[in-house]
Structure formats: structure tokens, C-alpha cells
Amino acid sequence: MKNTYYIINANIINENRIFRGCVFINDGMIERVVAGEDDFSPGKDVAIIDAEGKYLIPGVIDDQVHFREPGLTHKADIYTESKAAVAGGVTSFMDMPNTVPNTLTQELLEDKYSLASEKSLANYSFYMGASNDNIDEILKTDYRKVCGVKVFMGSSTGNMLVDDIDTLNTIFSKSKLLVATHCEDESTIKANIELFRKQYGENVPIEAHPLIRSDVACFKSSSVAVSLAKLHNTRLHILHLSSAKEMQLFDNEKPLEEKKITAEVCVHHLWYDSSDYHEKGTMIKWNPAIKTAKDKEALWEALLDDRLDVIATDHAPHTIEEKTGTYFKASSGGPLVQYSLPAMIDFYHQGKISLERIVDKMCHAPAKCFKVEKRGFIREGYFADLVIVDVNARTKVERDNILYKCGWSPFEGHTFKSKITHTFVNGNLVFNNGEFDETEKGRRLLFER
Image 1 (cartoon, rainbow, N blue to C red):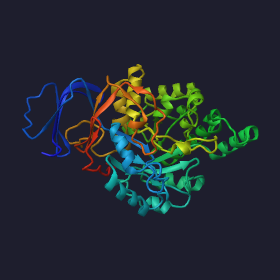
Image 2 (cartoon, rainbow, N blue to C red):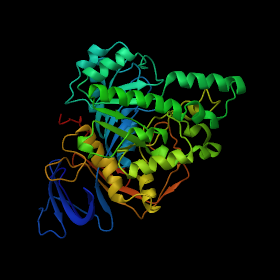
Image 3 (cartoon, rainbow, N blue to C red):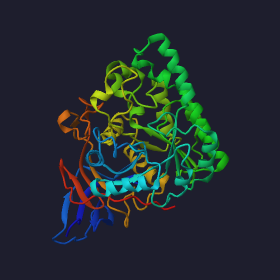
Image 4 (cartoon, rainbow, N blue to C red):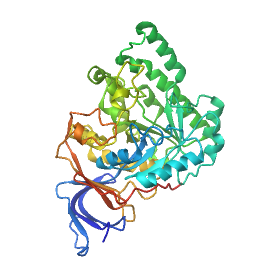
């Protein structure tokens, strides 16, 4: 029987517990979850997968990626990046609207869904984009079928900087969608750029990046977003928080399901700090910027006490040529989706975070935050988006095993202390010890709103 598997002897991580058990997958769904040994007889046509010594987790849901299609496919596309995603245990992604053309109309939004239905190996959703003049298009969006509306309250590609306060008030007050924001104050950044240009001309050192795109710029913009959300009772999700200063804007007084304002942190802001610019240079130039060790420490503290709700990647590939050159010429962003889960498991090995908490922040929390239908958990009746991980194997990042179209990774040369061995998407074993089954594509995510 196709897409019928019986996973046995697994260490199952789900809903803040680890237990030895078995999972039966049938017709794309999780049909049976049993703790301990199981006397269930699956039948002769069922593929048995023995996960002895390994961990079985729900598929990772990455709520912020840039797969670059359409219009920027020289550096990435939905097929290549979704392939890298499933190799890294990411079974669902939510893609940003700053493609070319920008996703600012319902027609352009549906064009992306059509592309994904033909090309994506992972499940998918696409944000509706906001501009200063497309509120009518935003209000047409079906909130059951679209993850959210993305508002760039800081510099972005094309016509997507939303800097008009009346427009922001309208979006925050009228949108039925979750509003996801990129928060950096543009006027603060421009003033900082001028200061550094006067001192260095075009040869601004990369170490100045967190001073130009400063914690003040981040806090000023994030504060506005939080104030607007509180004023209009908006469902707000702030992306890629990067500074200690911003952590005071969030609380852990309510469980995630009851929060109206939620927050995301990205792997690179947990992994790197400003001391790494000396070695990595513009290859770790992101917006918002990687900041100080104290900022990184504050992000970790907020993640572990639940002020920060979700771990994502902001996977944003550029070619090597686009990432090199002087400070102003080097593009911001980098590829991460293939190694986000192994990176977090390295932190487990360091004693910084438990496996249960990693699963909570990368699998359960995005599902709760966006109200994703029947995904993000190992539950009977849910889609079989599942990942088997060997936390005691090794994965060295080298050019020949990087699957991104751009062909590079900031982790190149690093050996992770874990290995993704199997990834199921809707019950299809897409990734099996380095081999891919591309016969079935991922599905459009739906939302219980």
C-alpha cells in the first residue's frame, strides 16, 4: 500500500514528553500512536521502519522563508529550497511576498500557490504583501487559506516599505489576517548610514552593521507595531527579533494559544553575535543585524521563558557574488533552512535547550501561532508530517551536500552533532537517508480560524 508505514522503536518527542513508541501511517495520515511496545499487525504490504536509537518528531514548520520565486530564481526557487527544507526536517514553510513582482494582489498571490503545487516537496503557504496603497487587496484575502499579511515596517524590496501611519492603522484595524511585521525604523537607519558614510565613505566595515541597523531602530519600530496591535486588538506576530531592548515588549503571562501578540527568533540570531563578523564578514549580514553577545544572551533568556514563541530561519538565499564586496554592495540575508534543526540540536548537546523545547518552538508553536490545521503534532488524525533524527550521528556541511541553489551556507565546514534520516510529508517518505522521492508534492496549508 502506498504511503503506508509503521515506525517502531522510536523515541517520540511530542507535547513536552519523550516516550518510546510506535506510529502507524496510512493514506497520508497518522492513524495510530502507541506508547511502548505494540501488538498491532500492520499487514504484509506495510513498510516497517525501525527507529531504534533515534527520535521521531513532528515536521518543523518554518514561518519565515524567502524561496525567491517568481522573479529571483537565479539564486533560489521553490523546488530547490523545498528540497533543502525536507532534507533538514522542515515539512512546511511560509514564504514572503518580496518576490518580483511583489505579491500585492490576489492574482499574484494565487500564482505563487499554483507554482508551489507543481514544484514544492514541502507543504506551503504564502504571505499576502502590504504596501502603502493595496489595502483593498489585503482585505480580500481568505484567512482560512493564507498564513498572514506581511508588513515591512523597515526597508524592503520594491514597493513594500509601509511607512505611512494612516496605512498602518488601517491594516492593523481592519485585517482579519494575522499581521506579521519586519520591524526596523527607516529614519533611524538612514541617519546612521549617513554618519558612517561621512567617516568611511564606501568602505564601511561590516562590524558597523549592528550599529547602523541598531537596537534603537529595532525597538522604535517594534514598539510602534505593539502599540498599534494593542490599540486595535490585532493578531500581531513580530518576526526575527534581534535585540535585548525589544524583549521588554513581550510577556509570558498567557499560554501561546491565548496571546494576541507573539514573537519569533531566528536561528542565526541565536547562533552568531557581533564577534563573528571578523571571521564570517558579509556572509552573516542579515536584516535585522546580528548584534552583541549580550543581545544574543537576552534572546536565549526570552526564548526559554516563553516571551519568544517561535524559532524560524528567515531563509534568504543570495549568490556568493551578491554576498561579497563592500558593505553597501553585499546583499543581506542567507540560506538556513537545511540546517536549522541540526543547529538547534547542537544547542541541545551544549545543554542550552532540551529536545522537548526545540520541538515545542519549531513544530508545536508555529502550528498554534498560525492555527495550522492538523499539523505540528504527533496525533492520531493529523497529517503524517514526521521526521526521524539521529541525535548522535554527524553531519559535516560541505559544498557537495548543500542543496540550496545558491550553493553555499554560513555553516560550511561545521560538523553538526545530529543527522536527519527520514522526512515524511503527508505520509510520503520524501527524504530517506539522502535519497528523495519526488513523486508527490506538498500541499497548501489551511488554517483553523
